[in-house]
Image 1 (tube, helix red, strand yellow):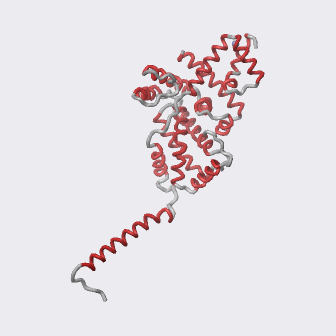
Image 2 (image 1 turned 120 degrees about the vertical axis):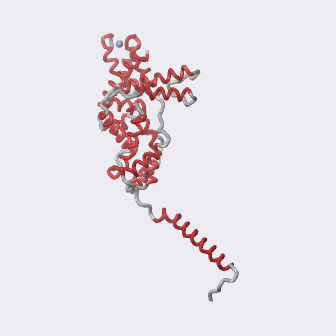
Length: 204
Length: 122
Ligand SMILES: [Zn+2]
């Protein structure tokens, strides 16, 4: 989740201390982990699922699992990688449970449109902000993209979200998914081509 | 690549987008894109789609999310998940109550002593 120069390995030391405190069931360490990773977990889960209501429940479950399983965390990957793995697995399980029903992304994005029109920060999909029409255009594109992602099966969707939404490296993705790099790349390519076809048809 | 290699060209789109393609394949693909309008359009759509995916706004957790997680863990573990606080965590509160008790006792004694006609204890 974002690499920055850290020649002394301070991040790793801090992370190990945090993990030790978690294993000692220290509530403040727990709160720190939630504070540090809540937005990253939320974005991953929301983009995977497309519904805020489901996302809130799943994202909370991710942290519950983290604290239930912290004793089993051996530290052979970064804490963030482990968190992403838990989040991805929860999403995939929920998607199976929901039976790949069509998620209610439309209403959610209509709400988002309203918020943005009322002056909230626009998204990167509204690059030339010169009026409400452009904001709506960006939001329609966001809705289309979310729809396109929702059409992918869970194995393809997770790769698109990790790579193209979260901007993770292939190395991180193989660590999260446990898949070989070649498998990640070929699946991701198919997923991207499907997104391209859907958006070219719908988005014009 | 000749015109019959559209499929082969599109197979390289992802690696090209990721800048993960070797120099030879990059040159072959770029040459094909220059000469083939079909693949050029396809790649333009590909770029546009991935640009849109990458441009999705980063959603942040709703307010109260963190508190909700803590509450859920407490509830799920019936309050037993977190370690019992150590003595060091309790000291300030206990010290504070002790000081307060002492203060109240001192005020009480002073008030008692300052009352006229009190009986002096030898
Ligand atoms: Zn071609």
